[in-house]
Amino acid sequence: MCLAAATAGVAGAAPAPADFYQVAAPLPAGDPGVVLRTDPYAPLLSIPNQAGPWPSGANRIMYRTTDAHGDATAATATYFDASLPWVGAGARPLVVLAPGTQGQGDQCAPSKLFAEAIHYSPPLDFAVEYELLQVHALLSRGIDVVVADYQGLGTEGMHSYVDRRAEAHAVLDAARAVKALPGNRIGADSPIGLWGYSQGGGAAAAAAELQAAYAPELNISGTYAGGPPADLRAVAAALDGGLAAGLLGYAVNNIYAGYPETRAEIDGALSPAGRQALDDIANQCVPETIARYGMHRTSEWTRDGRSVAELIDALPTVRAVVDEQRIGRAVPTAPVLIVQGRNDDVIPYPQAQQLATDWCGAGATVEFSTAEFPPIAPGFIVGHGLPMVSGLPQALDWMTDRLTGAPTKSTCTA
Image 1 (cartoon, one colour):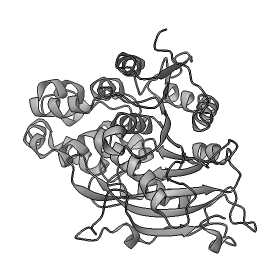
Image 2 (cartoon, one colour):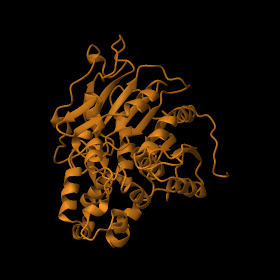
Image 3 (spheres, one colour):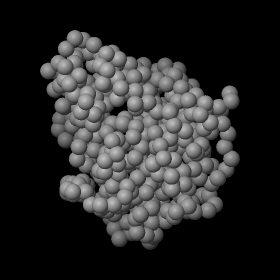
Image 4 (cartoon, one colour):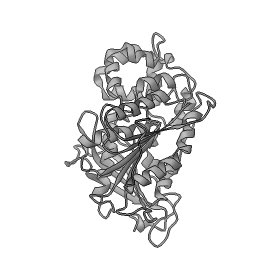
């Protein structure tokens, strides 16, 4: 029975009260993954039935996790317990879905948008939770899904955008939190998949390679990493001047907030207009950032006209932090599927291919799949969005096979 059966007669729930996202100080004691707060509700786009909402119930959760520096913090997520039977044999599985870029403002947290469906505050603060497509695809197979908000998205502090350790910890601890929920169906040996596209692909990839050291008790069966930003230097150069240029502000804000040693260099490089832009971006969701900063260049933010990509190489402390974020230096213990668009205009193809090469060289089992689309309106995110949709059926079948224990192939020798 769904965890939200008590609210089965409600078509949707009101957004969570602000105090749900307020983290107690000091943080309650416990291990990573300990559940601090829950809020079950019947999700939007659900149909009440005798067993609870279909295709799932929903439970908003807050849990302990670990930031990029090893300190305890809290994050939130949404757990969807599927109403349909699991299509495979054995225990019902869980997939941790790492969402793609939502924004940096607290209003952009998926756990808020799943309840609101559409967020709007005049004039340009707008967001729609597009991850519903992937969530419902997984639920259709009878797979339980938990969608992480990451650290600082909804909760206090700066959102840890494309910070590989913080995101990996939030993803892995979301699985631990679901297993700790009273009455959940995910047992100690239940298979677990990691799933994400774009920012989520990077987070899932980072979680896959850090899992053995950080959460070895989790039974990870496979990871789908679509369009993963594995090399931030390459991504910064690709984004600049396109519709998604403002998303670089999310990354700069995280580095500034999370790595104090970089602040003097960043302050020295930013112009007053650049500082104002970054302050504004810190409170925006993606549509507003695109509307205000799309098709601009990050050289408009700096004193001497250098771009963010150029400054990464010019500022030693910033360069060290960015280099530390590169994914591909540790080995995933479970199979990985990487789907990457040949002409992706947000996440460059060569750096995703290099991630597969790095993992293959270290002995991982990797299937690298290229989405072959011609260049379509380069710079307008079309080349990035199409592979997410076209690759969904392949990823869903691949993940279902991994969760059932079916043999997998590897393209590492190709």
